[in-house]
Image 1 (cartoon, rainbow, N blue to C red):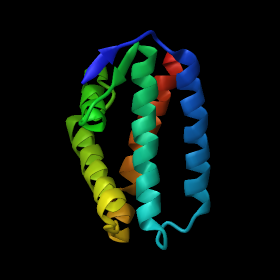
Image 2 (cartoon, rainbow, N blue to C red):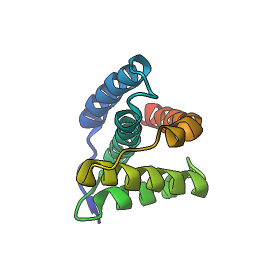
Image 3 (spheres, one colour):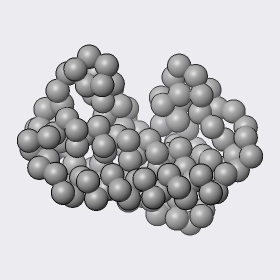
Image 4 (cartoon, helix red, strand yellow):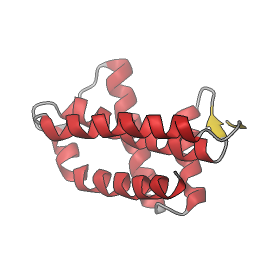
Length: 132
């Protein structure tokens, strides 16, 4: 569920700094050996970018399906294509299985999708930068 709040540009900027740390971490780890941790970080980067974007509009996603609603809401900005939204949901589901059930994320999944995740991240960052 999306709720209205006051736009929070300072929090969005702070989130952006955390994202930069996660990106540095991803560049420095062995993605094949730590594919699950890397995939979780790609998801966190995308989720936090989406969070920062909606904060600039004075919105916040809350409730049991907060992350799903947050990702779905991105379609309203016309930044991403529908298939990119589906890919983010696939990553969200894999991340949830990893975080809550201990399921590993296959390194082949990350190898095949890494470039697409990076493209999504770049689109979201560019959009956020224009808003800040």
